[in-house]
Image (cartoon, rainbow, N blue to C red; front, side):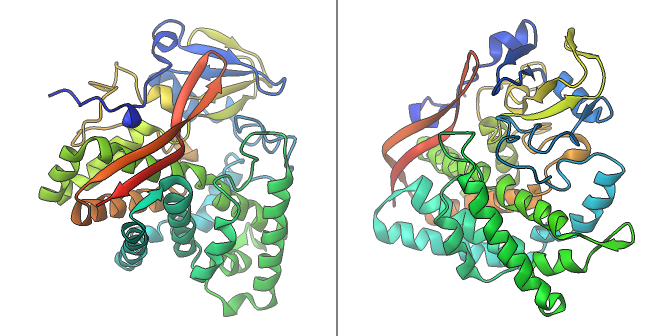
Length: 390
């Protein structure tokens, strides 16, 4: 049965025609052009080929829009390639897998229930800033294993912790984050063994037989704060919008809680909270029949690949129990998202809590958040979403 149409929960695919035709499009990014790779097969192939399409370029250059003009600190392990990437990732892989544990899920459930208590008491709530942002920030304290009250600092930073909402060249937020991290690293360094947070873990870690430098620790922490900020906020907000328009799917999950795991994968496929991520060519190459010059940029367009009809049946519909879902929302290859276990747990607990506690979500007002990439206008979420939760 076709998915019912609800304007606020629809996320159209702007890439369909270009993906079917050339499979690649060039956009300008602050005078440093980017070729967007759109097809699922070519996105995976390019992501896998880290020797040709590197992440370890100038810090900030693989991000789209580029952050070269607002930072010079390398995000670790995100902006490195093997063998450095392998060694750096090994230091933090187990830490970022902690969300898979039962105790973590219990703590996350308590936290998300608290957010719903506040929303139900309020009657009407603006989801982006008054539900999703606090939820993301407070959940991050679990990932860092730090006091819950730290989240109040982060909530005040807004939905983007690193970039200005409307100016990719505004570095003021980056400086705010840097100052905060400098102070936290200095605090932990006084007695790194006394704490059990991520700062202390990094201060005690060894990379190739030596301690990490303060800049390396800062690089890991910048990635931790920036990498899962607006993407998780979008995913949480979009999930509420979807179930507001499709209560029948929420009812299915209530009757069959085991569906929540598939629902997470399908919703992040459909929403694709991160549109794309760049790479820099190490040599002259070719993608989708298009030449790519050495030292030029491509982007791996996760959102376009996730709607490829050659891979997904009914790609523009949410099939809540979809089987065999090779979506690319958390990346692909060695650089796959380090924070994916945390994001998946947040969404799984959110969906299960919705199914247990919520009878109805009524959308009162909304303003779409539209990204513009050359000829493509892509909805990634909402600037504003006001709902009443029963």
